[in-house]
Image 1 (cartoon, helix red, strand yellow):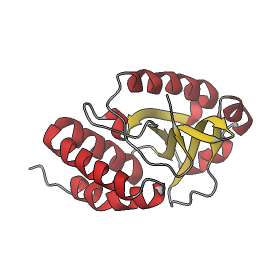
Image 2 (spheres, helix red, strand yellow):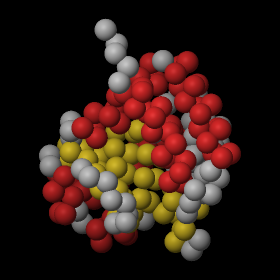
Image 3 (cartoon, rainbow, N blue to C red):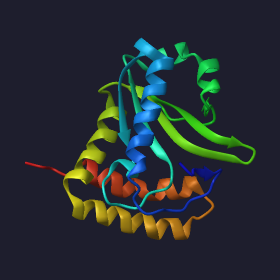
Image 4 (spheres, rainbow, N blue to C red):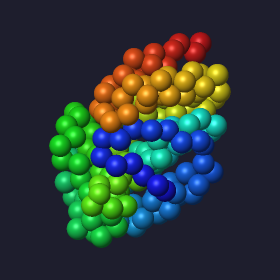
Length: 176
């Protein structure tokens, strides 16, 4: 996993190694966090076949209740390269990230910690599953990401915020 420096945004071609990287990290996280975890899923663009993505694997960790996050063994997580991103303030979600390097800061994995089957869980899974099932929608998302990565090459927050309208649209598609 090559990772991204702080704030940096660029996309790379799809890589078969993304799935294995997720599997490796899932094993580590399950070992470190044990019974606190109900499920771990691969999400984000690296989980959607055939589209470009930032070289960063997104992971979704489902807990019985978000308060269980306080019981994480943060020292053991740190030994495995994971740190709590305390400045990320999103209601109902905690974020930990794995860093290949702390100097310079290079992030390789981001784990979104949420309540299992809660709103955040459902939104992340629904988005991944809809794009996986509809390759034309995935390609539309890829084109948006290419455009936004050129507009915001050094502003990860602006890039992420600019994708929200598309994500919301996909998650509200009526599939009757």
